[in-house]
Length: 436
Image 1 (spheres, one colour):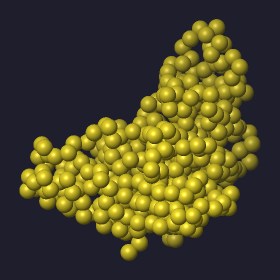
Image 2 (image 1 turned 90 degrees about the vertical axis):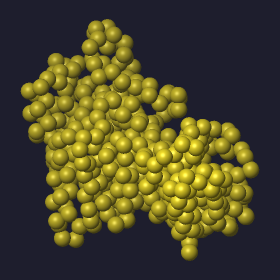
Image 3 (image 1 turned 60 degrees about the vertical axis):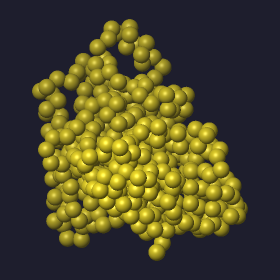
């Protein structure tokens, strides 16, 4: 039995023990319901290949993390353990931690009488590891993984709550949109793709009923298919969903939304490939100070640019441009006097304004998940072309299929050679865990 199978066995045994204790009302026995933990003792440190994108450490010693639902990320865990063992002389084991699993996080106990049993606590839900807090990296053990087990659990529960589907189907290549028309186009393409001989996809998950963030999972056997989520409007939504999805360690996420174009030479329907992010949404300023740059990820940029060329052909050179995307938390950002607008944009090189791209990029940077943005110009408010119903509907009808297919083709290209995404560019200078 490999160490990941052992983690799964320990977790499943705890869940069985929890169900039995709750069913019998036995609160004393519940103390044995604990999360498993993965422990890696690096016994000898030596310099490794400097091109390694992750699974490196700065010194010998013990690295450990308690984990929840290891079956969900089993492939990821196996890869991380194998890379560490390749890079260093180390001893690896799975054992129980001393952290009790709250019954509210265990499947099958929904609606059970839990009075007197351990309750979830926010004391155990924070991002101290991901945000590089001093105390997380200066104890006897250093963390292996980015999240505490209760942080993982609450994220999984919220994915189900917001999207209407359990988190088991989330794929590692994720697309975000604001529009039902994009998810409809994705679903139409996905159903056709499932009928195509030789397809790598095996199943399509779709939401049942109405949910805040409708989600569509085009699933592969390995879990490296494509998930599309309609996140609605605004940076708060973008932060909320990525805070949750990050625990599943996706390979990449990309935004395909609409934007206001700021250059009078633009046309409705032009594409903007964001290569810089001007954060005027302020949603993550307390986690990532504004003076820390959020770089574009070249591997994602190239995939999106090639996909646009494939879909649009010779039109690409006229249709698409790269540039800075400015994100705001104010949907009516343009409702100001000319003087105020001048002061807002003076000195900026922004070519587009939206509400989500900067939050998605900043949280991708923060969570070490590669990210990108491919926006379509829906209005030119500084040049007498505001977004109005008639023009918007005509634009939506003509642009939706091609826009979605650009993103889908980019995701498929990245999935075909995932090592290209294994970038060192998002690793932190200090306060970094070994795992991707």
